[in-house]
Every structure is written in structure tokens, then in C-alpha cells.
Amino acid sequence: MASGPQLGSAAPDFTLPGGVLSGETFERADYRLSSARGRSVVLAFYPGDNTSVCTKQLCSYSSGMEAFEGLDADVWGISPQGVDSHESFARSFGLRMPLLADEGRETARAYGVSAPGIGVRRAVFLIGPDGVLRWKHVALLGATFQSLTTLTDRLSGIKDA
Image 1 (cartoon, rainbow, N blue to C red):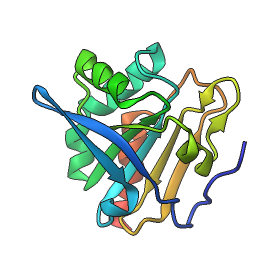
Image 2: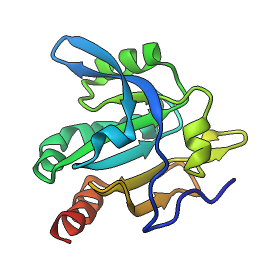
Image 3: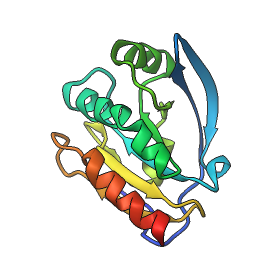
Image 4: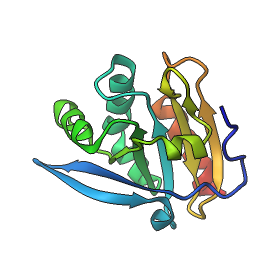
């Protein structure tokens, strides 16, 4: 596994297809990290749609969207499944953040979280409004995830810096 970007360095840019549930509509679009400049971005890499830990993680983040928005931050979920799978997942659980499809795992490799056998390691990267990596956590085991409180506390530090 590659080490991925280092703290204080520019986050690798990417463009991925994805979509976000808006009311009853799943709005599909291409998401480019550099287009989010001016806002912090939480990149939440997760192994798979509709799995127990991933569902708990993304439901937790989705329920805290107001807290993220209050910190001028967007949350993007990224996994190897396609956009159709993401739409079904978002609809099943009412997820309110964009879910991006990294089917070839190029973005996961750029961030050092592509792993043989499991596909993608559970990881969170906090990108500042300037596009610089401010904080990251890459799980060794996929059974736990960073809490909403941990992420909002870290984002508060970015906003106040």
C-alpha cells in the first residue's frame, strides 16, 4: 500500500462520478476536488455500500450534515462501487452526502488506501479550503470509523486556523 499524501501537502486532485440524494431525486454529477476550493472537504473512503460498518459510518455523518455545513465543510463518501449502487444505498438509508464511484480505485491508490483483498481501507482525509491535507486517519482494520465529533472537532481547528 502506498503512503498517500502527507500532512501539509496538496491533496491529490481527482474527478469522480457520483451523486447526492436531494429530496426524492438522486442528482448525478462529476465531482472534482479542486472545484471545492474555498470550503473544507471531508473525504470518507469506505469499503462498500450496504455493509454494516459502512452503513453506520455514513448514517452518522449524514445525520451530522448541519454540523459540517456550519463549519463550511462538505463530506464526500468514496468507494469502489458504481453510481447505481450508490443511488440504491443513499435511498435505502436517506444519506445526504455525495457518494462517489472510484471503480478503478485510482483515487484510492493516490490517497494510499487501496488494499489487496479488501479493496479500499476505511479512511478519512480532511482537506482545507486551500486544498491542503490537514488531517488523516487510515484504519488498519475496517471495523471502526472516526466519529462525527472527532471530525467536527478537527474541522473546527481548520476553520479557526
